[in-house]
Length: 556
Image (tube, rainbow, N blue to C red; front, side):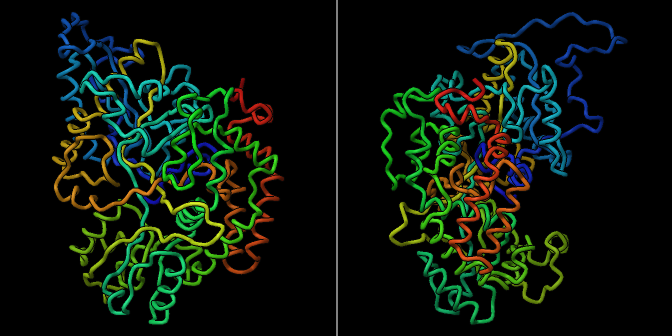
């Protein structure tokens, strides 16, 4: 896993090249002939005409108190043929669901491959008048118009638990909405970005994990003086994505009151937006209102939100104290920072919760030839186990800071979106998703993964009351959720225009290298947004009319 799924909509186009690295841990099995795993007629009604027609089987009753459904559900998440864990998980899940809905056939028909082509494949599937799949990972193509809005059902009673569905699944740890403010996808596992460090190196140099940015600078200086790389990182998705989002967030808490839905807006909710208080110290501030994307862009166009500010200058100035000064020499072109940490050539790395089991496993198998080949490690002279630990993102401080540091807290595991079809089909698919994304179904899913020895979650499971192996539970129990800084307002480098995002990355690189001043960086970034504003909003799925009238739903 390389990149967290960033959310959302102005960044999702830029993220199609990197979000795929935030891999779906449930990569379903694709049959060799790419046909559904079933001998039954497909959803489009095609049958083998050479086979005799058999009488329909008598329907069995569903579980007590549960509405009976009958039909087929096609599940086409992101997956690859090699993922035997997903196959076993699906088998376990299907068996559990059959006990409560015996007349519903689940068809495991994943799409995509290890080449990361799922967004393209999904886009082709969705272009059909009535797509074959019922369930997809919709965040890869968020502009599709016929996803079910899960927010309409989050407080509905789950027939399989007796709870409100919101009490079975944490709906707030990651919110994936489209331009209309509709929640189009539900994930199953959380991700948290933190820092990993070599305790042995720190102990040898009499250092403690830094508790603020200035301490990070000081610690890095000491490590470099000792002849080691202080921080191994990369300029592909870590520093220009995660890190800028985490720290710009400290300087932009005032923007939340600007981008929220106002009374009269299409997505205004009196219970939520009518009681909103802009508390900059609230780590979940962005979950306390409905985000109006058109108001965000309107504020940029009219200058309420700007990037040529003292806050931006200070943030970039602080960044330049660390990057690339205390990173590896090939920081701007390399993405192989983890092997440097494993070889004890670098004292710190920035990574996510998915690396907790990875580091632990690698420490136990440092001389595994296959693993060394995967990591492209040929110099094994420094490969020996060492004590390691983690610390949270050290906050920036100063008069311009508006709030405490947060993290990138995104989603991994399975990404689930429902394609709306006729009402009966949609109701049936929703019933299955409620089962899957609550304890009865997700426990079966996890049990299948564990049985296949393939359960390696990217972070804590967010389906409640699901039991995971003790070693996994122990590994994640110390993870401290800080709130998610990876929201649309916090990365002006990323836009809906990929080439423009690349130009912004290069501009940021020049600022970190000292080729332009932090103040010049802010001015040039502001100019770029103004010059390319029409292209940005167009690629984000909005029009000039939408920006002029943010109270109306986009496209109306």
